[in-house]
Length: 385
Image (cartoon, rainbow, N blue to C red; front, side, top):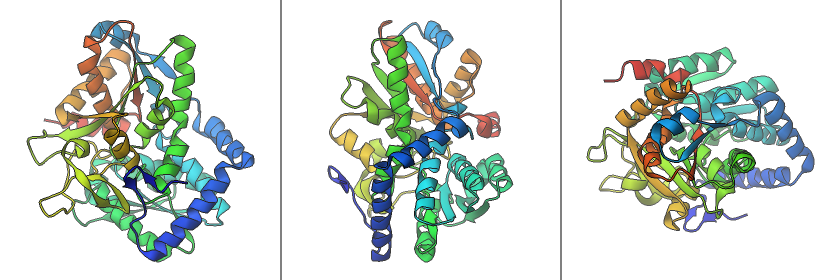
């Protein structure tokens, strides 16, 4: 298995972690080649998560925008309300295969934390979630859900107290507990094999989408998804690569690219090492990680998954950014137009669609990943000024 996506990826971690990663890779490769493992994984996706998620023709949005046909991939309908559960089920099944019954994870918006706590509860595993203090305050409901599910939520009070710091802390804790603890990483980031593993457990999104769209249309022209670390986007994009589909990842521009308050890694970042991988991340003049900002806790990350960095470099995907204000407007638009309240992360993808769809042909087909539902963001949207 490749350790790199072109010049990106790799394992930039202490030797003790390299050994654990190599062991993880061995179990992962064996698992995905084992029909019994895949059968068990698909069983839980169908009967517990509720897959396949629907591909919904957004008739009202299509008629209102007077451009391309718009379809929504409804990951918000999954159990726990987001795409994160797909990956959590897969990784927990690997943890069980490895004989580990303690799970740790990081979370930003809280959706990965909720999904991890959910899967851990179902499989009877001990669970601790690390979450930035800032994100705990922004996502109080999800914190309560995690605790209700039996997980311990530990506040990370270093740095900007957001997702990047939670990842740093989780990796540090994993090093201390590596013998009996499994680190369930939530996005397509980190040292190999995590980006590949997360993509393998999220590609069900794109596989379903491709099958579903060809049942109602003869093609798909555009696929749009929000990108923080990039797990829902790589899950949608990977099965659509080299199929004539324009792939568009949408990052958080925060208060604007002309300010320091953004999380637009692809637009403003440079190559370097962060969280055990070689990728693109937002840096200061010394090459250190710059603080980033987005109204969305799930997009508030200074780097991006190495596979996304590679897709940008070889021009197989395009990456754009959307401001907080544009995302809030898109949140309200989809809610009122289709009766679907999207997560603030997903609203970034909707916002970009609102920009491009009116200029497309009526025969064009656009798919937007609604990566999660917006219950968790209601207070945030209500208080936005």
